Image (cartoon, rainbow, N blue to C red; front, side, top):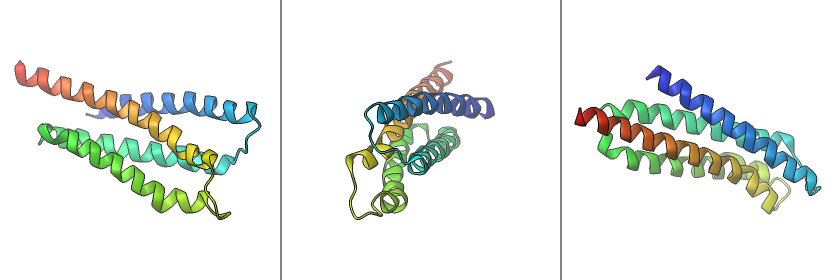
Length: 133
């Protein structure tokens, strides 16, 4: 379980770093506003939530593997709740929420969602193989 969690963390960090560099590059190339502290908060929040959700899924998989899909959906809802509670007030300090501000959150969210989905599929495949053996 520890090995799986570190492997997931490595893949998640790698994906977020690559996407983050591309995200920053697009903002820079288009001369759009770059608020590094806001981007950093969005990426770190998504990283922490995705890793925490994966760790919980690993724990949950040992007991109730048939409900992992629901747990995964709950984790996605939790991330959106975190956005509205934590990040949205930060992004809309000036009274409005721009598309750029929204994408500060959505791009790392989507990246984490893809990595989490692939990890969940692998986890379910591993569970299925262990039950069939």
